[in-house]
Image (cartoon, helix red, strand yellow):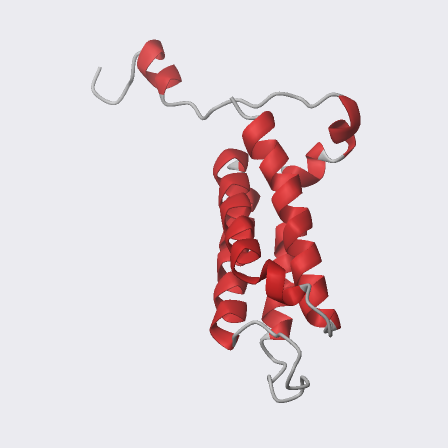
Length: 141
């Protein structure tokens, strides 16, 4: 019996199960288990990395270049994990890094004068943090 595991051992390494949402979140839960929203956010961050900071007026806040590139890579990694079928870890990565971005940039990006790309990045990050955070903290067992 060398390559076969006992049924108890095989079931002990199974991934965690998740509950089906009820109520208003039931319409959004399929999106929280898909890679679409976080991949779109990562694409927005990657596109913003092309914009030089010299285009922005001097008194307008725009996140540093390395933050825009770094967060686009992390969000792309979260999309890869979600695309591989691991909703637990993918939603956890998306939630943690979205909250990290908001911790670093929320207050400065909401101070006038506004820049549309910065507002879009902040709003998208807040939406992904709410979407994936609800899936991670409320519906995963």
